[in-house]
Image 1 (cartoon, rainbow, N blue to C red):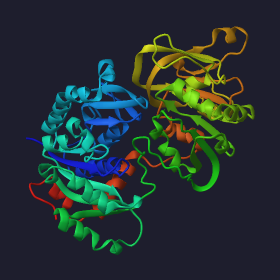
Image 2 (image 1 turned 180 degrees about the horizontal axis):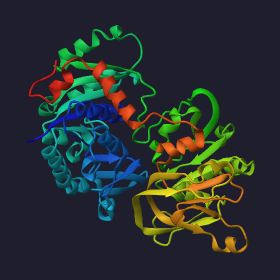
Image 3 (image 1 turned 30 degrees about the vertical axis):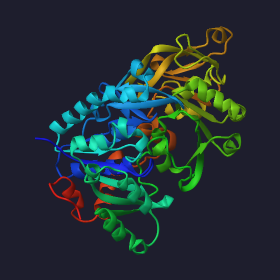
Image 4 (image 1 turned 90 degrees about the vertical axis):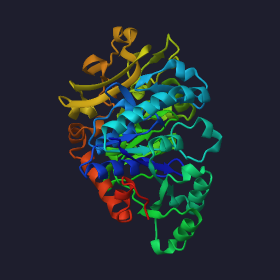
Length: 487
């Protein structure tokens, strides 16, 4: 048996491919079908640990929505940008230095057999595979090296939905132009258009959908209203800049959004904690009203540290800490809080740290990629509520962190508050650095810090499935996995 394949394509990045794919994974899983997600290539610094290595966070969540075990075949190629012109290449979960050095077009030819095999395997083991495209399938300058959009659609004989962000304007032109630039065989794959992020009176769309169908033969099968708080983390480094909270704001949490920020999806749950206002900051003035400052993960720690200094954020963070206010560093953020980054192997770069924790990080050639469960012990001050709390999370980092020997000898010693060098705290108790990603996704941590809970992922996935079931034209979702056209 070979799975039926449904593919979500977009007219642009940020059109809504990832969340719609996730919603379809849960929708079909609720029909009692064996479902797996797939994205041939993902470019993102948001990654999760699975058996065999790491995959893009979007495919991790899509697998959970599909009630499947996340695995590396679901995202066989992951590109993690380190600079504007360089990415770390992850093939089937593992760093591949040779591919990282290879020119793009040569790399595509090399990895396609691996991608095709991963997709074939998933199709052989499941009833439905829900596939996500990347960017736009109409990027004609990349067509000869395509390994993620129409080449995948044709290989899988996928029924494709083409989604556009109508809130940007020009939605009908985006849909028609994308369809028109496809080959005839590719056009036949497009079974329906989806208007996403619509605000207003849907009756005003007429006669646009019918005119579009007259031009293309493709029906508009869904108009999805704008939904700001669906609860799923944003993909591809795109986040909601609007500062929001539920109810009266009692705590403002500022996350520093440096250029190579990674794993920003782990902060989604903070948006749903009552009284917490989450904001992303890129300048010192934006920190003025912050109760907490979080330095998140980074794919290029020394580069993002240099950027942070260039913005004057280092002075603002020091002033915040000097007032006794809370500072939290996660993974690369922990490394930045220390005294120095030492890089004997040319992995990331040498740099002086912010000096808020008396620790030093030494980069190693090997990469730590693993799930971890550990207990906070002896946390004090602003973080004392974490003491004794066990947390589950994951590590994805180069380098190991330990006390600064000279400073420790002089009496200035960072305090280890989790086993194996996973977490460190300063003596005054307001600065904490941890290697574990995913802390705010652990209900025990949310309860300890805020005395509150956020919606579970299961609730989020079911909400997404309910949403598409409500707004997609009747019969369309069933027809996509049947041998018939929609509309």
